[in-house]
Length: 169
Ligand code: 5GP
Image (cartoon, rainbow, N blue to C red; front, side, top):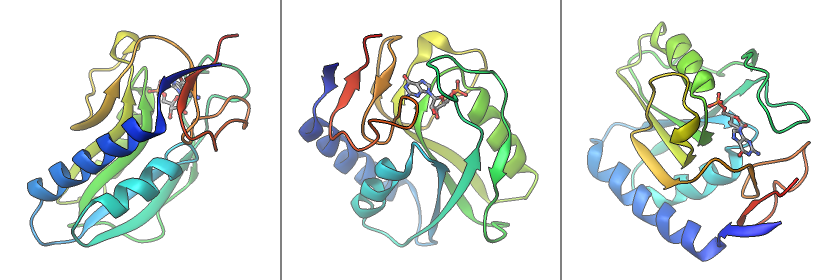
């Protein structure tokens, strides 16, 4: 295990992202939609870094399972609690990897007629992209390495690490 991004650097970047997001939106509440489970730690810090009214909801999708490679399959396991028609949705994700998950979710949410949909991702691994999707707000762009910590897991472990670490298998 090797530290890739230390906790202090993550916090500083989230503070910047919060201000950036606040500057881009008007006074209507921003609906933060966290993707379970990986985004929950990032979402809780990002929500407090946005000096504007925000609301919070979550969606659940099938995840990587127990390995470090994707099954390529996306399945909704938890839907939103309320309709977000006419709302400004900010999808909050831990990492954009192949882009399959966010392509699927933006398609699902688009059909519900929100006013806008944008993506905020703590991490981005652009070298692995299979779908042409980009997050509007990105914390850090990282190389093609499997990372854990700050919400990200390996077989459900390591989500509570304060730093983002590379898991050397
Ligand atoms: P995508 O659909 O973009 O390929 O996958 C996104 C999801 O894959 C993320 O939400 C995350 O759960 C998982 N994932 C992708 N890369 C990593 C990684 O380096 N570490 C961990 N722990 N999960 C990853």
